[in-house]
Length: 398
Ligand code: PLP
Image (cartoon, rainbow, N blue to C red; front, side):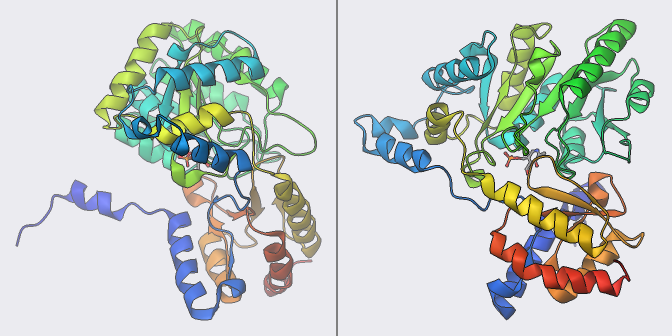
């Protein structure tokens, strides 16, 4: 019998705890009924896309040129779509955005994969600020780069600037930020971004080459309490934006986002060309043509996301009252809760006896915590609260 090499077998062993929990939930729903399972595992938006998304799809498909919408586009996205998007970004954020700064991608996942691949040469390191979306490490591994992890300041989950400064060395190619953050819900304000930018400028000078700030921001529009996320390219020239419409327009299955390489990025044309080359190397060909057009028309609109803020208030206040130790989310639809026992996986498994499906954040490099994705109907949260109360009682909280 042929035995596959160990590294091939290792590919098959990579685990994604969110997906596994989601699959478990589907099985459980088939057994006991979907209203009895409280699935907080995945960041799958619960609100409908804005009407304009479906209307735009309909308009495009019933238009005169509807047949050509299914054709290949330029690898970076059809010029018209990039132009429309560039105009929209310029209207919304100012600056000077050109179609040749934009590259449409298959969601933020592809935007990150392509950006890492574009920038990496052997020995390169990227700094990741824990807690972070667990796929970053897989994407960096794929690019051949090393992930260097900095723990946050655990009192508020903001970056630990001293740790970042210590982590930067001659091999540092970039740092990834994700604000609003999955899984903590924390949003960096302008002061945090300004301080980080200052540090990166100083260290770039010291090590003699630019440190790219990769700004992964699929949750840019999901910010609560009347606040807004700062526009990072205004703070730091060498910012590369990786954006996705998965959450803002509630269309994660359509797989559409973009990379924005602002004109002030050092070696702009070469960086943009590297992005195009990396997209080709990774076999993306072009992002879905229909949705390139849809999002270029709908950019700046959002689904009605007020439900997420209502859910945040209900869930956070209730869990804290029950005695759980939680980080108050300033945005996104994730709540980070401290596990009452050291082993968060064991805690999540014990929550399953009430059909509460939550995930440990060990793979987000934040052991001892769990993530609750509250992108669900408010009714689901209301119905699950008595079960969370039982769970709290099991651990003598409150
Ligand atoms: N980055 C973060 C922080 C995310 O939370 C996600 C998805 O949940 C992604 C990237 C990937 O998003 P997409 O569905 O657009 O590929």
